[in-house]
Amino acid sequence: MTISLEQVQTTTLLGIRFWDPAREAQITDGLTVTVTPVAAPYPSPVTAFRTASGIYAFQGIAGLRALEHGPATSTSPPFTLRYQLQVTDAQQRFLPTVADIELPLSYRGLYRPGATGSPPDEDDDAATRFYLFSAPTRTPPPGLAVVRAQLYDQLANGPAAFALLEVQTPLGLWFGLSAANGSAAVILPYPTFTRSLENGSPPPLVAQQQWPLTVRIYYEPAVQSFSNGQAVPDLGSIRRQQQAQSFATAEGPPANEQTGQLIFETETHLATAGLSHLLVAPASSP
Image (cartoon, rainbow, N blue to C red):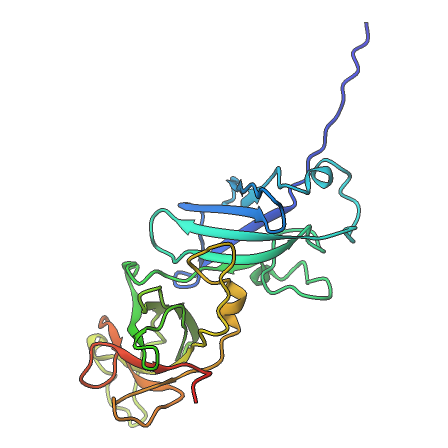
């Protein structure tokens, strides 16, 4: 008797590599990641499973099951559907993230957060990093610096929620996000230590090493978009916020950026003089 075996091929249409910018390392555990169809009358979320390499991958996505079990030969999907991606961290290292995503992807491989239009370069490993923002309650990993702020909306007389912080040091740019209560923490590596001074004098002691610091804030509540009753705005709308102004003193004048010093093994706290918080004026304010 001859037994005929049927071969079934399943394609994973979405895989995401989450990245911790503070440690410059992949996040391989502790996350719950779901995708939910936006237009479905009874949306059914699908939870990602974690692969051996720490990628969060999906199967059984509503509306795409036929493609998952079909031939993976086409590079031009016949249609795309809109989904909502949600990310939460059971260990509370990172803030929750909500993002809109269209599936199936127009390219093969891992999801590339910045990919639009033409096919992305498949050899660009950095393009597959989905960065998450550190939670303000996160304990900085050993050997890393932290810049903290409690942002306060001067016009709304309340917390400046979901403002994007840009921290610039001699090493580069680092980003953070304020939580719903206005609290934010940007965790970043220290720049290169000074080994000698221009006049030939010995370098400062390790504990006395410091570097210039510039902070810019992007905050525009009118642009923040909340969908499907989410408590967190869509990531795309967070990134679209325009630059706000902040106050070194309550009397002003407002400035586009704040400057200071990043000191080794000392937390940097941004605040308006005499206050425990930093006053911020939204980008759309007069």
